[in-house]
Image 1: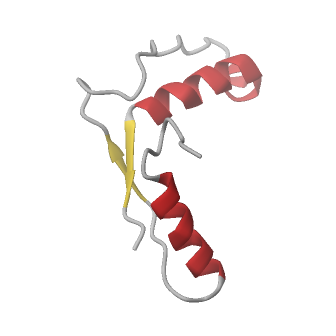
Image 2: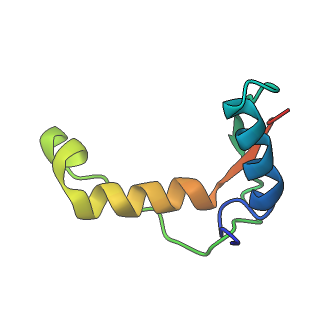
Amino acid sequence: MDLTWKPDWARTRARFVQWWRHEGLVLWLPAPRDVNVPLASLPRPARPADPRAYHLVPFYRARAAEYELAHTHFSGEV
C-alpha cells in the first residue's frame, strides 16, 4: 500500500509493528515541508468566520487536514 502523504509507508509500518511487539521505539517528528514542493497542489481552505464552524464543519475540517498533510514532512520513526 502506498500513501500519498507518507511515501515510505511500508518501512514505517514495519517499525510500528515492531513497536507494538515491544521491540523498539517509534517517534513522530512532523516538520513543515518545503512550500515549493507540496505532495499535492491543494489551496488553503478559507477559515470560517464562526469559531464553531472552524471546529465543527466536517467539509472544512477535511479540506484543512488534506492541506496540512500535503504541506507536512513526516519523519523521525526510529
